[in-house]
Length: 473
Image (cartoon, rainbow, N blue to C red):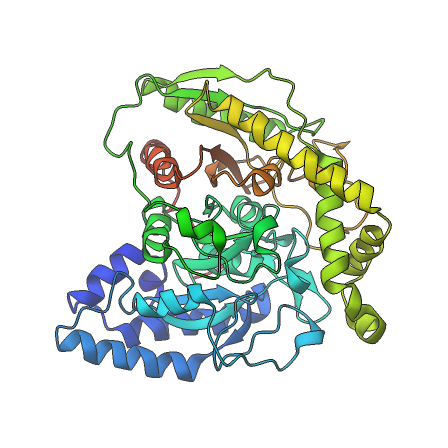
């Protein structure tokens, strides 16, 4: 059972389709781990054990008949509790949605099922996915498997926690300001925020101005690519998806000689930890050894931290402000704080922020006339304390204040939600505190699989998937 917890998604699918592994046996191993780690880590809002066992039995019977179930045949999957799941509670991390059982699946949940996967759990998220750590009055605190005194990141923290703990090799998360990449960095995983529209995003309230994307959290690059290729494709719910090309890896198997890499050590942050910086440079050195040309980006890009905050908090105020009168005493105080701040901005503030978003997009596009890929740290330091105060808490980096979370912890993440470019977080090593560090690759539109192909070279040179947190087996 312990060994089953650490096989990759690609290995599991191969074993099940060749009838070397029972889908029921594999699911039971993961359910046992989920139960054993529930109190310690708290990765799931709901576990649909009975339904999942029925689906695993059906998959096993179909595979025994030689049926082709798809690229995720029999694979147990957990999805973030922001995706509606028919017949399975979907509560958005909020008391305001307690007991909600949707009648229909989200489009990506539908595609997961059509690809053969078995949905066995809903992973935790802060209330409506509003912040970069995963806790709240409705479900408690989700903790980091590498160190339970630290957070698992957010808002896809439950998915990252589970994958890092060996409770399923793949989780489906969302990323609206770093919500896949922040937990990937905290938990030592691969996490991709795809190009806008590559995976249709049916949960966007305002589709044309959407900044959020769904994507994988995985222990290996191969598994992340497996999910992307299984889920990509147009859907009428998402206008950005209608013109998105099929995902192709144009650099697969190619030399890195001549690859133009722009390295950006800092965005709007004053500091980055010495360990994160050293491990980022080690990744760059590995790419240079393979022939890449590394150049530090010195362009004075305005990363619009303030304007990005205006857009984020105004949208939160508009979306969730109407809940406050009835539910305020049961809502997350951080969400209430964001709503209050969002209400304080004017229409002029909002329109100026929208114009700044366009300027940022064009500035990043200009960088891609000189570089094939941009590389930065993913976050400024290792995982924050589990009880970090997310509204006004100062992020400490190597003993110095670095600002509030958007500036102090995740300044490298939110800009690419605003611009729509693909951004990939992958492990870069470990810090002196024993926790993972992370590096981020950013590419032009629709180079998602190229980013994964490039990451695979880093994975080959600096492997990580064999490393496991202590206290799990």
